[in-house]
Amino acid sequence: MGFTLQMAALATLAILPFGIAAGLALARYTGPGKGALETFLSLPLVLPPTAVGVVLLELLSRRRFPGSLFASLDIEVVFTWKAVLLATAVMSFPLLVRSARTAFEEVDPRLVGMARSLGASPTRAFVRVTLPLAWRGLLGGSILAFSRALGEFGATVMVAGNIPGQTRTLALAVFHESQSGRDERAAVLAGVTVALAFAALWVTEWIARRRSVGAA
Amino acid sequence: MIQLDVELPLPEFTLRVDVCLEADVTAVMGPSGAGKTSLLETIAGLRRGATGKIGVAGRVFLDSSQRVQWSPERRRVGFVPQDAGLFPHMSALENVRFGARGDDARVSTVIDVLEIRSLLARRPDALSGGEKQRVALARALAMAPTLLLLDEPLASLDVGLRERILPYLLRVRDEWQVPILYVTHNVGEALALAGHVVLLREGQIQQAGPPLELLTSDAAVDDEIENVLRGRVIAHDTAGGITRVALASGPELAVRLAVGRSIGAAVTLAVPAEDVLVAIEPVSGLSARNIYAAELRTIDHGAVDVTLRCVPEQGGPAWIVRVTPQAARVLQLVPGRRVGLAVKSHSVRFI
Image 1: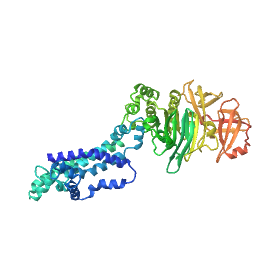
Image 2: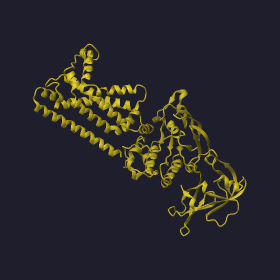
Image 3: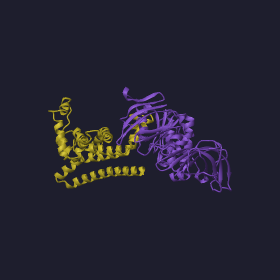
Image 4: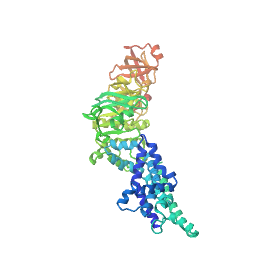
């Protein structure tokens, strides 16, 4: 369980800056290609996770970039914890982007304009106005992404395998115990995942409720 | 001095404004959707796509022929939008200090001038409409702006609040000497505050000039026109239910009892042009408390009403009077004719 939490937390932290940047871009950018970008970023949400796993395996293959780069640096990714991290990060990313986008869209752009006309640089306006007004949505999105990372199975099993003590997350362990006929142990592990997911979603709901009260 | 020669494409039309403004306060008027707010946002640098030239007090904000385009933060224009635009996650004090660059002395001064010291700890959602406007005005002034842009600062307020905020605007105008561009629908406000009026219609300047001439002419907005008068309270007649005000132009005006105004206090009064009665014979036995002899100077036939300008024999600025075309015909009103003007005490309101 410690390994699973660690991977999910690391994956969430790793995608946070990119998720915020992508969410902000989608919220503010109105030019051509926006629809295509949106669709592309949401693909992992609807694709079978195993398909995402295949794509990742291809990208990590030594024959092509960026797999060749890792190979030349002697970094082993496939079937290690790094692969777990990569798979969970890719699968959680769209959830974070969607939440971040909604959070940024709810920030009145005229307030950002006010900050600018009051002498704030674009960076200062973002830090002092946009971020504080969007932080609840960003936090909620992070927790959602974290929950998704906790339960990731399909892509993880493809690129990281199911190696005890190395790449076996909770979701993989549930599958393994059930396949091995140890139903009771599988049920206990499943119960743990329920508890974790429940806690994470409950916190998300709580934040959302506080936000709507604050807005009223 | 504000020099504008700008174009901004908008969905419905293109905003084209070419004007040079020298008055302390310029009122920008015109129907809804005429481009007034867009003009202010263009000057503040908040609208992309504007071309042309904008110069304020010798600083060139925009000159597309020279590829000059200052960012909003460099322009240092104090912009107060219609809804005040306060940052909801900051207290009133944090809002006021946002653009002050650490100039605490100035922050303290604007807080006193706008009388918001008791509000400083509150968040915007705990402020009333008028309080928000005052905090927003303080925030704009605290940054030491080179120009103030006010977008209908009083429009969302009820009449009582308007009366309380207008004096603050007059103080800002007189004490800070920052040029002000002021969007309003209200002719009374424009007459009370502005030295110059620009009338916008569908993105173009329809007319520009001194407020009194412009706002009483034919082309003026189909809005209520008010006579704005300045004076001092001289007496309260509690039994008679009236307060007597000596107008700066000479004569006295009896208004509804307002014991809240102390004797000697300077007041600004407004009388709707529709509420002034015109008589062509000496007036007697009328309930109206204010009757003046005047000379009819001009008659403008508008689409609906006839607008008269009448100069009192005791002197002072002309009264603007609106009558129906039928009344003008029946009374045989012609320029040069002597008339009597009657105003009910109840038709006069304090601004």
